[in-house]
Image 1 (cartoon, rainbow, N blue to C red):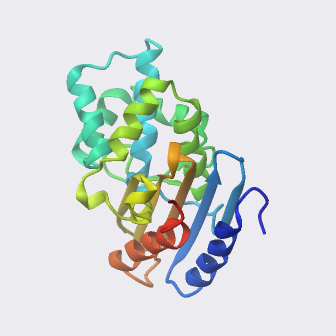
Image 2: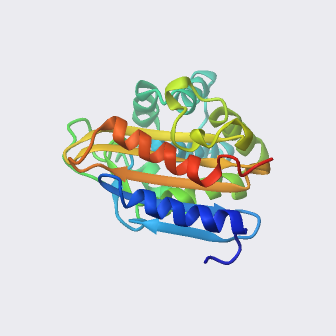
Image 3: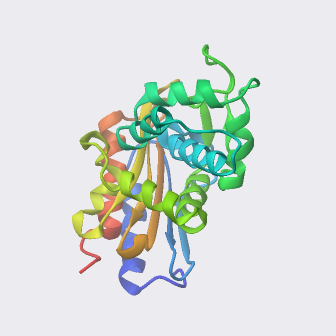
Length: 248
């Protein structure tokens, strides 16, 4: 039992653990109740895994905060790229923003990410474009939990509302993972997926409930024991088991 969660969620946690024992690959799940402060974790929550496109959420946070502080000046075109990066996970938009704002040493984003809770994030070498590169980094499920709670608890209200709006109305190909909690849960999410050297990686991070009460982060490295569909099904079913029917 985890203090701070209601009885219904306590029962659901046990169901999720039983389900994950049947699923392929390595999975870490973190649930955070923003009202009580309670946190539930299961699986590989401290294991570094490929971030895939979930890191685009951290990029958007960094760009908005640097612009607010006067360190950079975002143009309308830049803001359109951020919108595409959040709404449809546009890789070309992320590439353009990384190229423009990563700085001469390419470390401007990475120097800031820990301040948003991604304290275990490590850029990975071996990618041909540049080092570091947004698409070649690893973090833990706990990092994604801290990031999404930074977005909801610490960002200026207008920035928070913008990001919540974008991720609550994502493109259809983003509507899995946290989104699978169902419309009654008012979900919003940033998903990330792709094939890596150790197989498919399927990640989701976001929120559900009135006022984004609960956050959910799931990272799933299949490690050759399943494919894209397996990982998507795992992430989505975890959200369903946790939250479908939980909200009136």
